[in-house]
Image 1: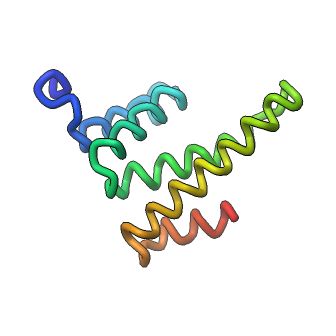
Image 2 (image 1 turned 60 degrees about the vertical axis):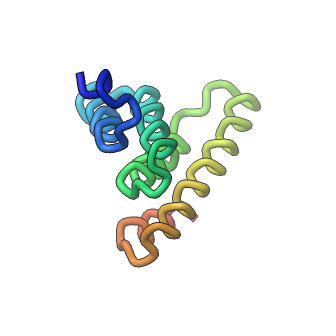
Length: 105
């Protein structure tokens, strides 16, 4: 209902992303909501952190599709790095951001 009132509310979009990921286990839907939250509010640190973490976790997914999957992997790595870099700009002293970025690299 909240999205009917304000479909671009970053906090609501982020909460829906968490719901999709944490409760339903749907990484794709979660990613969509995190990206929409960031589009709505580019400095939304929680969404940036969760999206970067999600991209990082997906880099360890099983490679069943050969070269196609490898190409997707490079895109995911680029996406994860971009999210971490944005998060560092928003909050350069956040230990979660710095630790996640360090683990990613």
